[in-house]
Image (tube, rainbow, N blue to C red; front, top):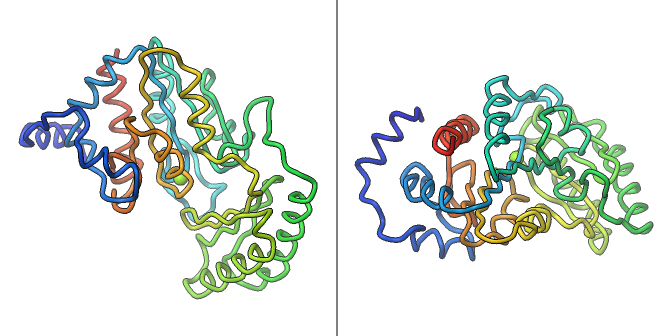
Length: 286
Ligand SMILES: [Mg+2]
């Protein structure tokens, strides 16, 4: 939605008397329907202005960029980079990109200095990687080999080895092949559920060690490191982002999608709307 249209819409909406609508607060505890961010933007921006420290947490695929048929074809637009560069220059404002991709890949794809980068759903950070037991490494290796063997004949299925996890992409597969691959991946992981877990993403299943902390722990650690008056703003479209929404009650958690069955308080519809709000955020805090 264009910003002007959003502003018009906001004017026509009766402002809630509380800072965060009660409906939104309640929904963070369990999944439910989030409130359109555009509807409550004046209240949200007021809270962001009041806080001394602002932490912006961003997922990458599906949040800052559209999902493409091939994950390697994705790139962040020049306009997107410009907005992030503006934002990171603001006083008392920090940005972290939290992605399921490997740390080195996400750093290359975004490529902006001054941002924090977190890969593999929270497990990989600059200078530190989550500990993984030898048994879990072996289970992962064996699961990946099995998946490669069993899925190699399914057209459109792509297995990405991320070192400490692997992904089964089905962006280019037929519905039938995607279903077959999903079933096979779940079966493979089922034989080692004490060590591995499978996460559904957008056109992808991720297989990772159970020991991995997840986006929730990573987001909470960054938030807890800030002292005093602070606010977190988190945009994400994935199942793993839901873990982060759940541990950030009272914060500006934003589901990128339909806003249904989410733990986020708010929603926007797509990555273009994310960019629109980030641009607006920068303008209003400048
Ligand atoms: Mg995503």
